Length: 266
Image (cartoon, rainbow, N blue to C red; front, side, top):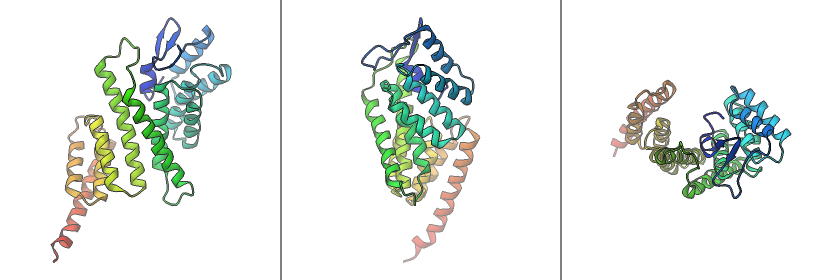
């Protein structure tokens, strides 16, 4: 399965054709050699289109499979890579409706929270419904992660497991931050992005940039500039994140300068 399936890939243990998820109430595994081979085809698909085709083939051939939810999740992630919002949401919701194990459920919830939030328009007729969905999915994922046990994977160290949970908590907090930006509650948005930074121990600089944006909107320009500086100090910073951090810092400096004369007036 592709890198997007952080939790799902970690939670599955492939051994002798059997796959088990420790959070599930029953042992999960392919019911035949053919099902195991089809499952492996999903894991090894080399492109989003190949992943989608393999997933669709899998759910048609094995509608009662324990891994139907995993197949739909992989399909949703592939549609996300292709920029197909509508099909991403449909496949993500199908994953949640297909008796997912705990880790697959968390991934599907986070995926939906992250793709729905940025596309909420100020005048959308279903605006409140979408905002409620983001909050529902992100908060459900955060709650599940509090008690989720480490998957039964011999190659997964305790430290790596904590880092994986931190990354997923960060995604949830960031999704809630985007939700609060849409609600124009910039103080709450900044608080959520700060939690995302803390959850990932500062290893995801894009959260610092989002934090800076929320701080700008709430008039805290010095804090916004400091957040951008932290992002820009990240080693091997991705060029796209660097451009965003530079732009956000320049905006904060401009807004601070514009606010200074007004603050100086009696």
